[in-house]
Length: 138
Image (cartoon, rainbow, N blue to C red; front, side, top):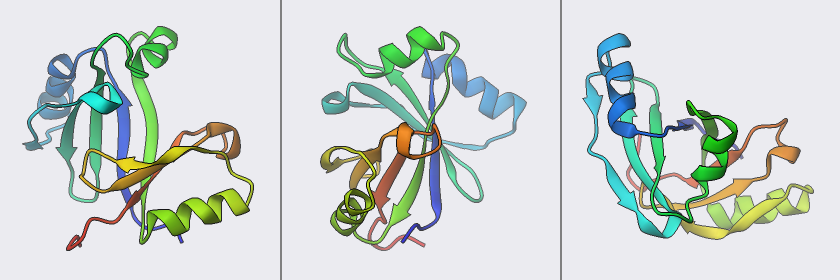
């Protein structure tokens, strides 16, 4: 069921301040443009690596769910891991049947495909995002 690791989500108080870490210190050369996902309350920027991506996420608006994370982790940090699945609805139903807490219903994520999140209490303390594999990927 679980597919490839698509990305690691990293919350940050400032994407602009975080980019030099990945570009200058770690040598990343493929850094996307920052864009807003108003419905999710975040700004997003992808750092593309040879085998995956880092998704930088910054709060957008007062209701952003990232505010709570940054209140507990003021410098930012790992927010979630994202794995690809062939069909988000099948994955949702399988996760529920196995007793995992699915947070909400599928919605469109930053890659333009449906995503769901699984509660950390069922995932060894890690917030897990499942993302339907983008059509034509890989």
